[in-house]
Image (cartoon, rainbow, N blue to C red):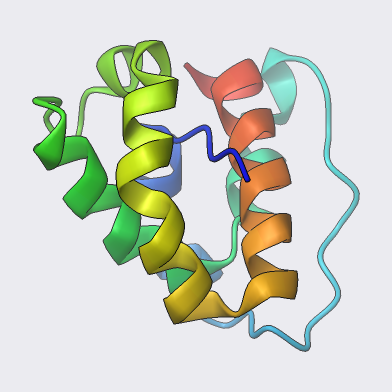
Length: 106
């Protein structure tokens, strides 16, 4: 499973807190104007994993450029944590949403 991660997800923690694994997530947007919508689609359960993985690969948790550029390394460090924190189904949603965040926000 691949996880593409960025600062936008970290900034969305407060906004995404209300979402749960049972809440349907919105369709993933395309285009830069949809950064906010992309951030809102990220399940909050994986955000602590993102912060830890970003730090582990030498990216600051506020450096979206670094996090998205280091996708493979961040993914490798976050995968088990996200699955454990979110469950498999929501981890897959996290993966898809994180790809949209890097595409729309970084």
